[in-house]
Image (cartoon, rainbow, N blue to C red):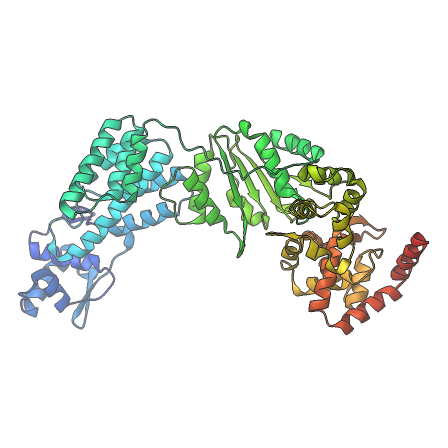
Length: 596
């Protein structure tokens, strides 16, 4: 048996349609259907059907008896003073409609979603519970769902470039609900994109006039935005230009720029990795600005590591969708990603995803469109993305001559005859672009200083990181971001390694001695420190264990954190064990021989 309430009440069983001639009995059945599989008392039926003049309980039971005869006694059970209509949801068109609506809203593909919305709306034959006053609230709830489904389907059709279809479906609904702004906005856009601009503008004028006359309000944001698009005429879709300003005095990195050219000629995604302050963002922006003409449909950019932590991809997608002209952003991550990919599927757009935390944060932001390219920067290795086809370009410190050249380009008027001082600064800055730019900023804002004077101030290791801070540029803070990203055991090992002489190589054997842990765990700790660019891979030894080094500025930071975070006795004992080991003695002797 099937029941239809999305229109006039209909009952169909194997033998054909079942008629209920009594209006009271149709209303009683409507109440029972609206509360299917739930108990409904005599009093509830009486109030819903008869209102303020309820009949005797016997009269109610008599009408229910005839309903039961029509649909089958076994359908309606009675316990105490309550009736329950037993119903499989598949037997009621309203339940099927809500199920399909839920499916449509969960669909990631706009095409599949539009089809599911269409299937749901096709169940409607007219007004819900037409002519049955006893279920007016339920009818109003279903009608609201119907209108929302129509609006949502129309929005998917517009994404799919099927505006004429959307306009035809929405026209009768707008006529029936002239004050519903979102519905009119969708219809207005459908008319406009179907080439019916005059009708779209006329619809806006009619809607605004009725809103002002009947409600005393001006149109809201949805309708005004749709009107603005119609007024713009046949304007092309938005072409976002979100790239931040290009880096001043960009220096070197020609091999890396060439590598990006080769990678992105055929591949869709390129990853730029390296330690904090090494110039990953600068390289990405230089490549993006110099190749922007290859992407005529625009450039999207996002800093993925907000101050409070990694930015959720759903939030980034919402920003990108708004930049691409979407006025109503879907709620879920999957739905946003699907709409985003649909909008970009035939466009040539460049994306710069800066300071990404991990591959999982990046994946939903990849458009997967043949004309789009993505640049990702971050400290991590992004092995998941590389395994899926992304290229990887690793940045190291600038060579001494390029570091000196960067300083000269940033402060050219002050550097005459400063060759020796600039070379010392380049060395003391570890060839790190961030440190070099800070040094240049400090010299540029202090006319009385020379490069030799700043180099002299920076030679004191206990205060070098203090010197490498200018406004919101701070080498210590950049290194700290990686330190705070690792676990407690990794931080302890990092601090202890910072207490060792620079000549001592970091190996799993040395970490085992310092921590008193197994070599497997020690190797994992070192690897995770390298993941956050706090250590740099050197080479593997004969047994296959990695060897690492710590950049000098990072070592200074590690020593600072050791003084603050590690008990002095624990640090002294760990260093003593390390230096008493064969590796520690060998490196110490080697260092002394080099000094002699």
